[in-house]
Image (cartoon, rainbow, N blue to C red; front, side):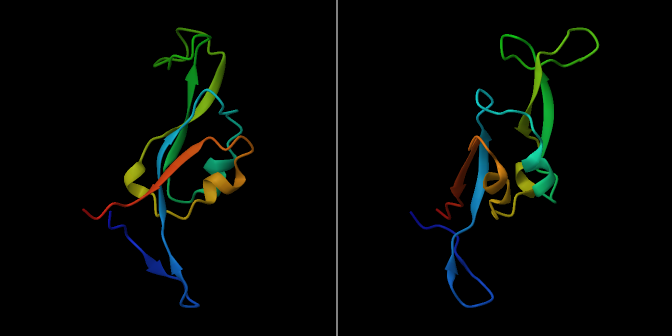
Length: 98
């Protein structure tokens, strides 16, 4: 598998890891990852007591909010989101060039 690699300013090899998913079962909805990401990749969405997403928050009372991947195409692979996540909810993978 050939993956995208880059070089840091210091010349070291680096493999960006792009967001694939967020494990909503463990997400606290704290928003730390949202604040760490300047690219608009994620958004908070309400879920009900069964873990199902709620479209209209006014119609049904949400139990909590969880982070979701809204714009994966904006991810630059920096992994800032996972570094601030207290529950390690983010799933990342390198970009497969094949």
